Image 1: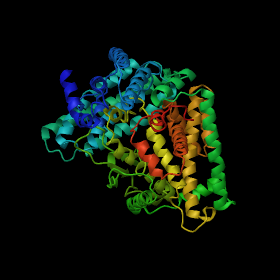
Image 2: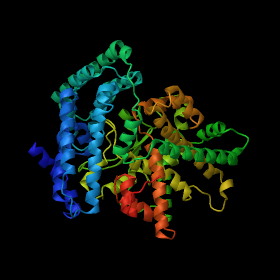
Image 3: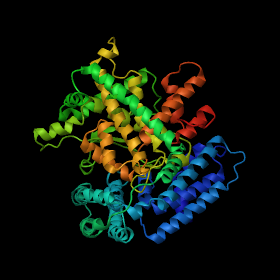
Image 4: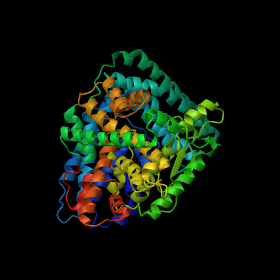
Length: 591
């Protein structure tokens, strides 16, 4: 264990040099490094995502004995962290200790309160596909080396599915149904996409080993699917709802938001109604004779040709970068844009567009990729048109803002400058092994930028009044539709998990209040059953808006947007409560 901890510390040494002993006290450094090693020991695929590749040949295990060991060890780290003598510590170090404590609490809560390893059959198959994809998508080592790690992981996957059979007793029916919907795609991923990622490997012995391990995985998945249909589905009668107390506790330890339920609901309702009124206003300005649904259907037809999609995104990114510079939106740590490319074949079934940034401790494959899924060359015209409707000009704009500038890519650039190994660690996407911590910052920021950029004037036609600026109004209508989707998630998350909405009522809510199609409402409700706090998009956005208002009021005069945005970014992935403390000197309620 000592050797592994030293390896982790070597990977983090540059961050330690940046931090300095007065900013980052040695007892906190030592204890946080030790905890990180323990965490990655239990979650090796998360280590691969982070860029720590000594864990690449290992796979998660969820035996009851190992989970008990994990909870016990995490509890001991929490006790030791809280017992540290903090006299003379900087505000930064105190905040980091508080955030790491909340993170550890969130992991304990996740294992105890509503344990995915006991309730969710998709948890196991998704860990398998995600841990595999992490070895495919980034060239941090030669393909032969990454394939050897994959073979080692694949050999452990049938064991993981055996653990699933032992652990899953009474899952919610919706969780089993979702797993069954996902499994054919995961089986296809291993059968077709995984081999296609390693076509450059020439080592025949290694390829034979891979063919054997990969075939075993596909067969194990098919057997798992058959077992779920035959055995698990008929006895899936569990409850996916957290209940009010657990819902609020989860929000407190994952997002550091502590609001009474009625206040939380009132905040969401107010923003929902505001966005509905604005949506109706913009729709009438565009064409009062058409319903909003008719307008949206027309807007979906306004898109570039399929073979011009990458060029359209490239031109949009250049416009956004120019606008951000001219209007002092944010200071960027790098003038480089991410590599814009067609989504790799093994990702096309699951994503239309995505930002693939390296993990916080990755030292080799440090490129960031903005992937866009193009129409397949053998598609019929109607298939191409259906695909491209999701890439109308409004969607291209909002996606580029959310994913790249000044959204997630800008966050990645700034996060690399944050002098805190704890905040670097907390920036990890852990959605494959549980809830990601601090999403009200990460997704809240990206969602905030969609509205903020239009509020600052992006897309406006010079010299044309807003009410007559058709191109801008279409952008605004698309932005509001996305905002209403997130508003509906906010309210449905509360309703579903506190027992105030049935699944059918939640679907109706997405249709009636969120202006979504019924098919999308069904998908969103399924997502909400297993992602209880997916209200964090709107929650984080509203916290950031309020913080900016309060900070500007404190300055006493109008400031360039970048003054606030740069200060916000310098704090890394800290919850808005912590950033509020840093910018205003208090952590009073943010909503």
